Length: 603
Image (cartoon, rainbow, N blue to C red; front, side, top):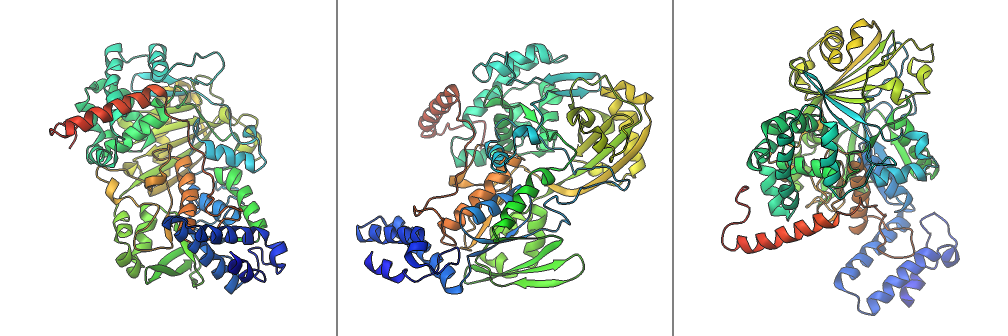
């Protein structure tokens, strides 16, 4: 401890001052505490962590710079990593993204100047970390979000079901799944009770699928369609409710989805708690980036430790002796550059981005073959459409809606949103600061390969004449004032059967200073309760990627306690009956496995 104190008397603190111990009390206390722990015979694990923190401090001091982390990708995973690295781990972050405006500093508009967002995404009840971000930005939830709103499901014969808001005052709160089952009595208009009760087959799968990692892998090898068959769910329940839910939740039909990920999604969004399916939306015409990423970006930039480089693509990552040493980039205007002062990298990209990066990174492919394998996973095509009409609509049951089983969908899942209702109070902005003329609808298509080649006119015509009239008959009387169509090939992660082993993990074995983030990333011992294609999960994975890099010695926390991590909020705990069912099932299966009868329905 004495040697430690002598060594750090004259060193600069992480803020760059030269005030010695008086100004660097936090660093001195942390490192001296670490030395004292060594002297008192701390565990080997604690010794290694203290040594890594000391090396990070040495490196920062010797170079006169903070640890420099390159974050590749400006989605939720990238911003979660940047926030934790800059504000908690005292790092310098350069964020790279191919988008022209990933922080949402300029409005995204159509050719005619009206607002347009790249897909409408919901914020569910169990998004604690995103809710905390909103508060930390000095915003109230009402500044950004609507109230929780109902949703409606439509099929060829009209409305099939409505999803109520369970968190509203006056709704009895029952143990899961009793409340959800009770809601089906009044909210399913066409599905017979016998088909609804076949849902009970999923309750055993809910208790079994997450028993351990090997069981999860077995469920992953099976399609969701096979899972539903083996557990006795009726064909009509699957066709009328579960398949549409998965098409707009994981963007593929059940026979193309991993049963494990389908169960994760159904549990997180529907079965964990009565209020799990309650969802709200952005309450204004600005994008998610403009509402949340822009103020976060400004806060990070104010620290002097954050730089965002837009329109910048990563063409390769250099690796030497198991560590990333440089990042090669290109820009939209043809420029090329290298970042060589790299202490660590966070890869916050999807499968397509991973594939392109790995193609230019032969040394990384050798050091971390799992990343090359991750790049082989497929992506899902998405098409978005916004329509401005010459009249208001009054026949909608809910502002957020799902379309299913319609031949005109061409195999896709469809959603549409009545924006002038969701974003009431901003109608003039919805019309590009001009006088409102009527309704504004946003429509999204997932698994939309058959739509990519259609002309904009054909996309609009199909929605106006074949799809929207199923839910909104009065659309037939409306005229289209303006429209905008956008296509996103292979834009969304595809959780196909057997994809578990190919999905990247937070820690990348073989490369000490590289971590991954994104909703498709497996977080292993840092796993979080948010599941599926989920903004909360992506955001959490970024924060955990920063924690992983800190644990590997890349940077140290500014707190006085060595080893303190950036705090990640958990989702609500499982309910007692779920915990009991899982414990009983695990005990029974442990006995049966010894005689070869462990989960006979999966293998």
